[in-house]
Figure 1 (cartoon, helix red, strand yellow):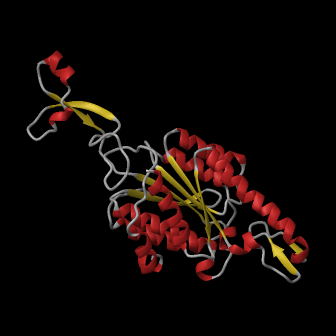
Figure 2: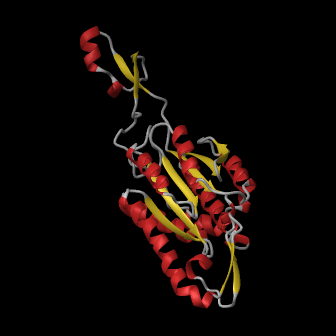
Figure 3: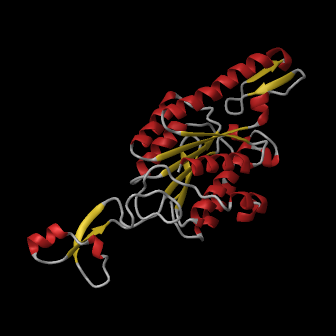
Length: 295
């Protein structure tokens, strides 16, 4: 199942890069993530009496002074990076043919992310949403978890409307501690509420990344002949001469993309434009290389 999503060329291009979380995350992080904790989880849980083999550097000397016994600080279960992958599977994501379909492109990007995270012994989870989260795969750090994620991605077909705000809110309720949250969507349902919710995740020390998945037709508007244009989620149809409206369309759509990018960056949210008519490695490499330089 996994091979349907990840081709050798893509893996070869991303294999030497690691997803590096910008925010400090819970637990001891393996791989190349930043963490100032050097071997202990962020959340202190309780004391336990020292036993041979315990880390001497975790001895609580203040407790020893009071109790005349050696105690070590016991931390919450150590976990690697937890990542919530959110995939938009609404009807508008069905635009495009074959591998250039927006949903197919987003599935490949999500699968590549999961592959990299599991390779680093991190824990990706998946939420597929439309008007709410319709499919949820909890985060796990086992290598075998990739098959479950890949199968869930393959099963996700584009249908129904979109309520991105509801999906983000449901995701926020499930999150514990600090996480990497990655959203793959065309963001045609970007109410102000969505970015407010994502910004709230950011203030809770989560690392938030948006992959704005768009087809080249939506960006470039290459149509030349009288055509009927249809809203894929509302079935609204408009007959128009594309040559007559091309300039205004590009202006309005370009403003939509620029506004989303600007609002993301001003809120500390990472924005990546992912064109579904180009190789998935293009957007993924741009993101990973930017993270490499930022560390």
